[in-house]
Image 1 (cartoon, rainbow, N blue to C red):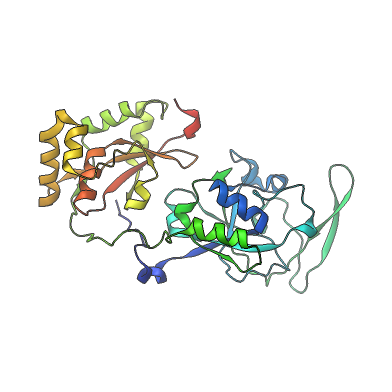
Image 2: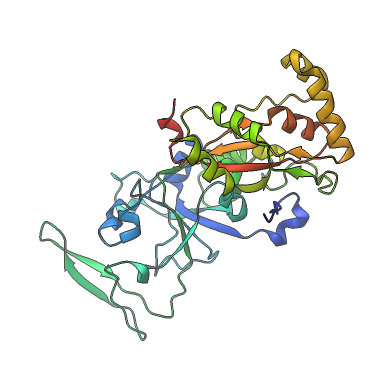
Length: 338
């Protein structure tokens, strides 16, 4: 199984980051920051979008790869989920851009390139000029479809989900040059230290001997998985397909159930009956001997929880080693499990 490295340890690595952008209004930006959440929108698109219509939430969070999006011609990549629907169009101004770390977002959410040509009933267009085509809605009232040309370079990416939360781990920057001083203060407080700086870079080659858990460890992890899977057979299938992901200290903060003991004494106090096991793990990590990768469950909604390897992760971080975990998909939403 090929292992992936995280590409955003320091500012010097910025050239390796592929940002995507979420355009929105200042009104919506305040809601996004206050809730630390991007809400999905696009419910009205499901009539014309087969994939969206068959998705669980029938909503999506939209991004674009275009830093210089021409807002006079297109609106893909513009956030609508957090916008107040009672506001008139003339009250809205798309003046805020959330810069998102695409690589980091993909470790938790499935990003899909999107083109309106892929929709079942796609828009009409020609190669020469834009035009508006009138149609009727369900109530018989006319509305306009905005055409676009083949020259328009559509660069939209979507996450078919109802919300992305917590959002802060993926935000590299927020671009706003408007006059709202309160919003500027919110942005400054929200960003704090940019997340892509992360913690001090560690020596990735310090420990290289992560291995697949034993049968007994897999069975124990399943027991700890409670109702996260329909059966042990389903769990085995998912763990065989699990991705191996390297976890830094920032990402570790968003795994439920982590002990995060940062000293040996704290581990001894937390697990008094496992002192020999703890000392053995210290020894193995120090000598680059085989250590089973921790197992973390990721739910449909994106939340993560650890079911095996808590002690291993703590000791790895204490030794300045970024652990590699098995990220196992659960078919359930986090809110649906006991």
